Length: 229
Length: 229
DNA sequence: CAGCGAATTACACCGGGTGCAAATTTATAT
DNA sequence: ATATAAATTTGCACCCGGTGTAATTCGCTG
Image (cartoon, rainbow over all chains, first blue to last red; front, side, top):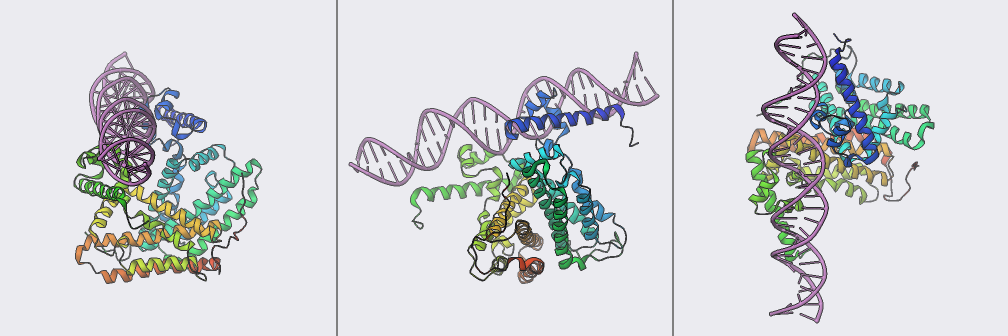
């Protein structure tokens, strides 16, 4: 039920990708703000409504790619093995992404990802939309942490710090890749990334790691929450 | 040259406030999304263009109030006395705000601030705009920290954490104030706020305070920055 | 092939925001 | 006081992102 796509859904994926590709080309050539959705629709031989049928906003045509990765930390925290702390599993997740040179880490010379990043860094509304998605991810992670027994303030602090720190590292990787082009030293960057992420998680572990040491995940014994209103 | 406002600027301030007040009333009554800028202009007996002359966006009619406070940390870091660390002066700044029950801390029953917060928390686009301003403040603070000799990653980490942690504390105060109304325990909240902020700064101090201990501020001996591109 | 539901389309519409040039107001110099 | 320059306000037309609706087409299933 997962494998067979059906002609319909297959075509949808195809159209989605086509729209995104065409739009990306146009944005690069003329700038994000100087290309209207109507023009994209015209170029793709599709109605304007259809574009908004695939993407909730114009920005999401660019930013929507790979937004699903942002919800991984929250999921991992919820489904983590017994005996592990949230910080551990998220940390390991990040290490894994970095070591595998996942596109989002900025360690791989993924051409489309480079183009997307370039657009995002250069355009305020794209940057804003990107930030919004990240903020949503923080919210999900904080929720997961609270459900796992963390106190509200601590949860937000952790979620925010984790997401922001890793994001900073990844963006820095992209920045360096732009500069040094295809001949940049991946190994050095990987090491550096691992170090930075380790640093961030160490700060969190040292400062507040003890707050999150639990044995049984998902046992709903949350702290005292004042349900006011 | 600062005291005397001149008839012109005085009237501008007046109009600005009038617009903001009228809009606030309308937003509260009918909801932010259900009031158009044209209607606000009509109610204020002013042209729509004039409204946008005073406020860059519709959201800023609400959020713009007190946005200047957000740039304080960056300024304080830059102008801090010799022998003090950035973390110290920002921490003290926050302590000061809390002890003085500054409106932005959510510890004072400032009616307008309450109304504004309520609107912001209830409306996504207002929340987003608010976040954007906060993000700008982070950027300013990080810049200041870098100029004071901090390494880039550390600077962003500090700036982000400081702004986000304090914001979380303040919003929590507002939340409690909404619940318990005018009879909420200010002293307890003040204590709790101080504790939370202290906690956040302690985490930062313990983890990375040593990275920022310098004697002479503003002596431009910044680290090695690769100017690529 | 018939017919159902999902997707696409055209079209009208709303509201935020801008550019422009004219009109009005305020400050200033004589 | 009056002319002049500078700053605001205004009306207007316009662009663009995004939505609601109703009709139409398309893919699937029996």
